[in-house]
Amino acid sequence: MPAQSAPSRPPRQTRRRSYDQYCAAARALDAVGDRWTLLIVRELLAGPRRYTDLHADLPGVSTDMLAGRLKDMESAELVTRRRLPPPASAYVYELTDRGRELLPVLRALAAWGAPALDEPRPTDAVRAHWFAIPLLGALEGLGAKVVQVTLDEGEFHVRAGGDGQGEYGGAAYGDGPAADAEVRLRTDAATCRALVAGELTLAEAVESGRVELQEPTEIHVP
Image 1 (tube, rainbow, N blue to C red):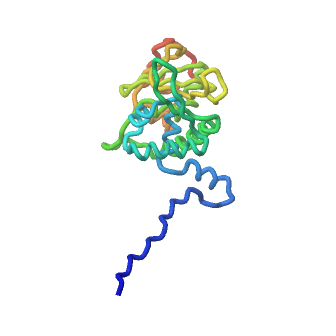
Image 2: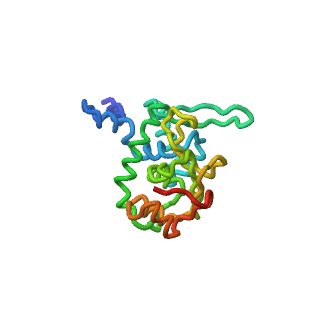
Image 3: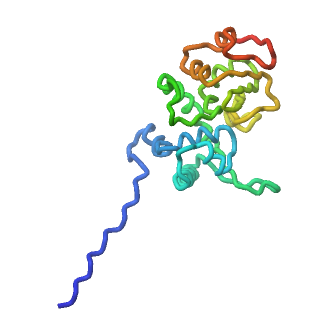
């Protein structure tokens, strides 16, 4: 009696990428609802980034996961990949106009999540520029085009009008100092958390000395 061959395996099913619901919220989540996607958007709102830079500022993401998410985001036309001219000769990822339209979404999420921030957990990574998006409103209220903030953890700056169409190519904020900053502040992460949570206004933080005005030394703080 001839030996029976093993039954063939059914073809592997690919993971569904859609909720298949005729709903605007569902369509949005089809594109940005996967883990890490919106945090990649957060990083790219600071401007074009190399893959290695993204990986460094997204602690916890694996290289395979990051590569996969970036590929998905390219397919969804949220990001593009381009090569920098010599002598850099490196590839960078940057948001498309549609990707930059997610800034209000990140701002709303930051405002909603602020009450849960509390004190940093022992396992929490911290980057100074992660405070930029939740503080955009308060810092834009200073009336300056560019505001630089220095923390013990690093520096970041915000640019008023970073909407994807303006002078700075849509970068709402940037990691590191800004040579063209009109206002420079120094504070700490705890004060940033209090400002984000609404426990403290910027004027109160300046008056109490928790925010130090480095340049100019006097400015009207609403």
